Amino acid sequence: MAIARALVNSPDILLADEPCANLDSQTSKSILDLFARLNEDLDQTIVMVSHEEWHKEYFCRIVTLHDGRIRDMQECRRGSVPGEEGGP
Image 1 (spheres, rainbow, N blue to C red):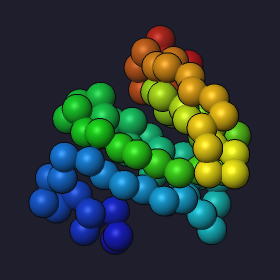
Image 2 (cartoon, helix red, strand yellow):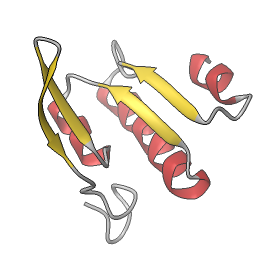
Image 3 (tube, rainbow, N blue to C red):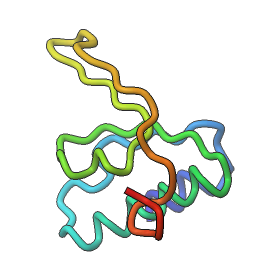
C-alpha cells in the first residue's frame, strides 16, 4: 500500500528505502519487477537502498557506500526488465 501511495502523485523521483525488507523472496521479486517496469515503461527515476546482493540485477546504477562515503560506482548494467526474454 505504501508503494501505491508513493506513486499516486507521479513523483519525479521515487525514494525507496529497503522496500523489500521483511518480505518473502517471491513478494520481493514482484516489487522489484514493478519498479523495473515503472523505470522502463514510464521512465520513472527510482533511488533504492538495499542490502540484498540479488537485488543488483534490477539496478541500473549501483553506488556502494562505506562509512558514509562513496566506495564504488557502477554505471548502467541493465538492458531490459529482469526475467523477460533478453533480460539479465
